[in-house]
Length: 529
Image (cartoon, rainbow, N blue to C red; front, side, top):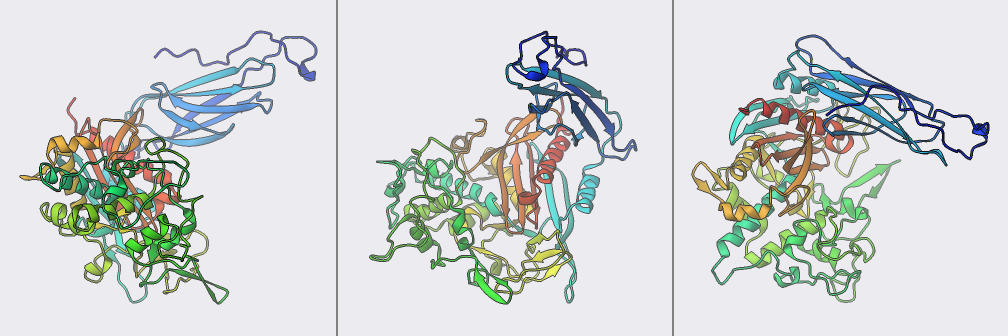
């Protein structure tokens, strides 16, 4: 790409209806931009990062859009008038900054400046990268595996599944440490649906992925009060386009601690985080969410015609919904005749020998499952729930774990080794070590080569190879004390799994994205041009 000279663009005279320019003379409204780049470390062991720094002048308080992007079109996003940003230096890259002013009566003024950085020094090894990441960020434990074309090219385990505290020794993370997977669980549900669909073809139990959800045998009827005669199908639920949406008012009504809804103690008094009289079992909870009067004469306190539904027809708008995903899990039980949790263990985890994959914390021996932690960056104090949640090294420690009532949406647990086996099966056209879980023709229902879509709970994720955007398929997981990722590139067959026992993805998303990008760029080094 040919870049214009690195200088302000001077616009010719134009009329302005501003008093300060009433002299009629030509006024240069060109923004002035200074953009510099500085390697943060010139050591041969330093990571390939640098600091972009910029300032703008001549704004007249009228800048409305300031962007930095690369010469290949990768957008680093909107930035402030003056600031700095760390960038990954994976190859020679030209960074361009453009600013536009929208002074009333004036043409749009634009300026651009480019800087090029040639990177010759080797970057940190992938192991050193994660070691540095752990020391620079509040992550108790992490396990990761990188694969290319179905083969593991790197793996690592860092930190602890349980932090040291009075009376407890630290327990190091291994590649076999099971973690809570959060929403990665949804991809297993999508795979289970396709497995059941494939195996029912040509039998009396045959069903369609486009079956109306109310024709799958549910003991209650789902109706969107904002839409007339809607046809909500399984495929809509699995692509988050059903028009059934999450209601954040009931977030804590989806969790149990020691069999009870969590409460918070403030000034010596306990207050419920779920302030509704709601069921603690999966099926009644789903019914209470979608049916106004699940019990004759008794109105549900979870039902909301306003907040549980969107005014859109199925298939029109994508809106991520955990409750809709859980509803798909419940419908599976009635249509297939086996609960979704048992089906996944029997037909996916069993044949693939995923021995660590389970649904409940009680399924594991003590000190086996990685404990979830939430970092408290303020002062290390703890607000106790209805069970004591101690503060350990500035983290809330959820010793008793959270049980997720709508479990199909995020209740699975497994080790990074076992999740990687599952992903290898997907990447390898539904087969792993001689065991065929899905036929390639069935796998095509995921539409992995279709960008920016969600199909059968597999989602798109935009990563970066340091210069260009890359579309991955998989799923992020994020809930209380948990951050996980499972992604692959359908074109290069670069695949990754990483599991953390903290919710850093929720409150420090840039670190999460950096992990994805770093694993991807490492995977590129194993691909022969």
